[in-house]
Length: 274
Image (tube, rainbow, N blue to C red):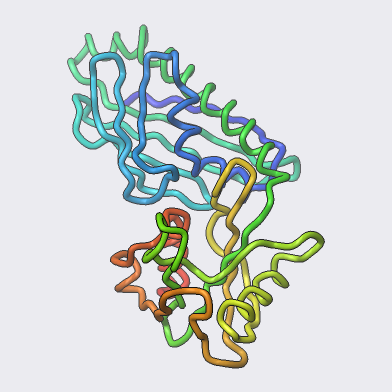
């Protein structure tokens, strides 16, 4: 089974590179002009998201199977190839973040299919991997200086606190984690505590960072921390409603796109693995 791998060292923190990988536009635009076309109906890659793809006249669908701080993976569903996977792994090093891109595919058509792999498939795959790696490196460097919005994963009795947006109109009725913008010279953890006090009327103890940073706009990132209630009972001061969401209900809630990316991290938080 043919497999190709490309490695790039990016001068940016691992969480920032992970954020760059989540930008669906990065994947869809970086390979234009190479005879490969990938489109996404969603702005962010998340587990379960589907991408429509084509190589010349051959069409198929890629389903995202991983999208977290360790990287991104996608597998082909349907199409003429018996197997096709696209994997990006991230590794922290002393000199930056190592980005390891690999693509693996099955060869239809016996010896003629294998010949096509050598003459066409491998060369095209290498160009795609290089274009993607270059785009990831550029976007990661851009995001290093991005402004930050923090979110709080407030957990109690095995459930996480979610709040339902009241505005703007395109977000009204959907759910998100509590949080807000980090002020100049303010630390992330202090912003989490302040936002919980302002939005919910509670005092929290801020814990560890979870999940990847999520790109909201070209110069804005969402960064989420765990939090524990210390004082007060949460109130919906600026939102339509609050809800304590157990793990079995996480996937059914109508989350905003950025918060939906974080569902695997929330599942891990509420259902710790042994």
